[in-house]
Length: 104
Image (tube, rainbow, N blue to C red):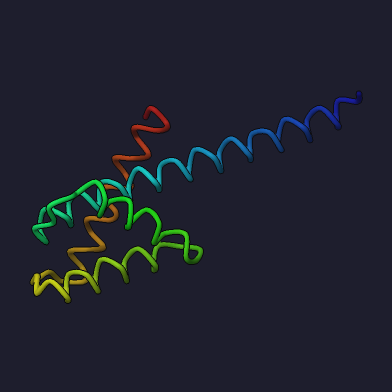
């Protein structure tokens, strides 16, 4: 195998591993968001709700699907929380999840 092929394979492998780690970090973030929101909403089964938030992230690429789920559930639960507070919490939880997954 030529060194060019080896470099290509190494880059491909790194891309796949990075994508898998990012997926894991986002799932970890979503679980944390679900547990946080479940507490604010008074959900009796926080783990089940966290799973709903994780599943919501499968609807489309990006974070908007998770945000919309949380926003809708907070509105339905008459929980006064701003869009910015939700987005801020999403950022905090993603940072923590990435640190846990990547070991930074």
